Length: 216
Image (cartoon, rainbow, N blue to C red; front, side, top):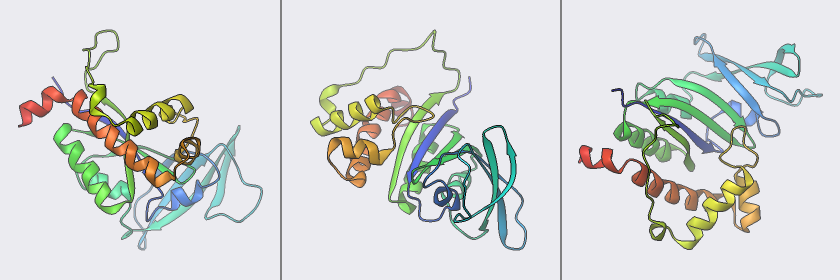
């Protein structure tokens, strides 16, 4: 049986990413990358919120229905989050952005590699959280129960998880970004991201308890 894990991680305000800059005030639905040429990688970004002015890092090249495609590029040697994921031999399957956050979806071969990727991302970026996980072969109609010890979480971590869930932070497309949830909690986005990362680590430990035991 395959053991792959489909994961989506959120990188808040990544250090080097023209897609996030483009998606500061609009939602980027998808990104397609071309082959490197003359030191740059061409990107085509699809958004359903076209611009009425020229103050943006991109050129509109195609429009259909409510969507518009813009062309950007980035330097080949720019160490971005997607490059970080693909250094682990995991292909990026989907990219989207909104409100300063980059969502990257990829398949990790197992939990150990997923942890290495997240750790690598966190060594380069200020805030990285796991938005969703799905194990290969999982079936919603035939799933195993996962028991989570509520006492393992601090009161603040439970509050952060609950508020993020209630506001739709984990939905896709998401209904609220990190700034929205942080504002509702009365904390800054970086503090929210820290509590969320700690809580998600505990959730991952509970979800993959059996796999972790086998790896040890």
